[in-house]
Amino acid sequence: MLYAARLLSSRCAYRGYVEQKNGAIVRQVVGYDRFVGVPAYQQLYELYRALRLYVNCFQPSMKLQGKHYDGRKVRLVYDRAKTPLQRLQLSEVLPASKAQELQQVFQALDPVCLFEQVKALQQALFVHSASVSPRSEGELIPLRRFCVEDCLMASFAPSLTPDALIPETIAAQHEKPEELPSTRLLLEWHRTRNDPFKDVWELIASWVLAHPERTSGEILRELQHLFPEHYQVSHLRTLQRGLRKIRARLRAMVVVPTSCAMSL
Image 1 (cartoon, one colour):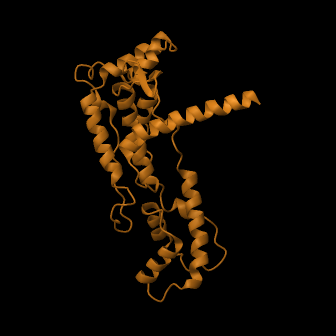
Image 2 (image 1 turned 90 degrees about the horizontal axis):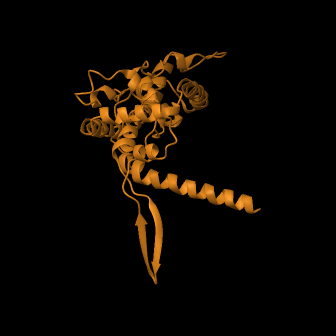
């Protein structure tokens, strides 16, 4: 019983620390808007790639060391401000080669250029916010990618090889960009009956990619507006079944990268 209580207490403390960092980092940069869809997810991933380096290498923080009570007054004692990278190096848990590699990455990065990319990626993400005025049907906003080479100091850029940077950063930067699935791939399922939407499924799939939050009722009303007297309310169930298949295939095609975390 005592062990369970201690375990629960440690989990609560860890959860509190994570939520504190969400408020201090994620909410300060991303905000509280709602972002829906694959393009928004991809842009958020690019922002986190830049933010991860900026926070870990150039954003110092102070940790609480103790509390001193003087009657009703409480004096908080903090340690000296250090970046997450400095705390990791001082912990001496890394092999010497890995610590030297991280230090080389830190010395090669230009904090001003890195911060400019963070701001540019932040603005690119805000375009995908649900509070932004609706875009035209089928409009896809180009993805703005984080370029780590543009954040290197001029004196390090000619001599720094990709192997000297953090492996997952370079791998994510140079791998083939993940593109949105083709609408044809989303429509590959067997049809056993007359399909009233057989001529417009590609159009519907493009709407799902551009505006995944739209409901089947909204899509049916849009089709009724574009093709008067062609689609009826009785076709809603057929549309709903097709949308479920499209969204299931979309979820299967898009793989969330495991390197989204901002840890070193």
